[in-house]
Length: 256
Ligand code: 13P
Image 1 (cartoon, helix red, strand yellow):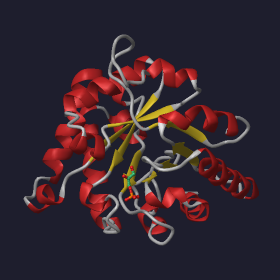
Image 2: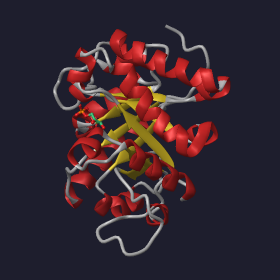
Image 3: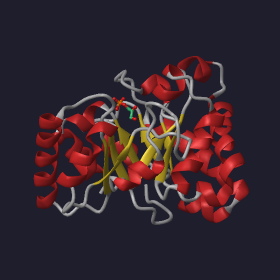
């Protein structure tokens, strides 16, 4: 299937709470070595734990691999023990930041309102937010997938508007597919991506046409090609498989 417009694909690795200084160095060494051999047209990003961003920044200084944080504070600065601000991430040369990952929503009670504030803080700090949205299995089975996804999207639109949303990236990650090995079929994922784009089109034609919408949830070296071939899937947000250089590189190649 041909993409109608030329949105650049992105493959992003969310390392979650994995890694160590040594393991990160080895992973990035392998990945940069693999990437210099092939000329990839896809944009490649990694999201290490915040503590390691400085080291990753130094290691990736001369590479084409971009990087970002997995979370940020909605506050700009002040007495917020344990939090990390957008400007601090920018100070470490981060280009991107994940907001609203389902693990943050479900395990740390982040509401859609808070996620929207974080999205806004990221933009104000000069970062590109990657907004993660997706339904649980119970919600899918109850036929509520699009209600949930639109609600999560609209919460951000309410705070930053279409202009703000257009400066970020959307990642559709069905919660039931995350870390379960139970990936959405290319058709299931395409259906939601298509509906997200249609929803955006009702607000702004250009926003819909240009918005990069990534799929996440058990993407691996085997299923990536078929998922990325779908017309509204512009790449992937990869968890487990991003910790293995060979497999992550295979996924990057599948995206271009
Ligand atoms: P898995 O690829 O391990 O399913 O994780 C997906 C994810 O949560 C990426 O943010």
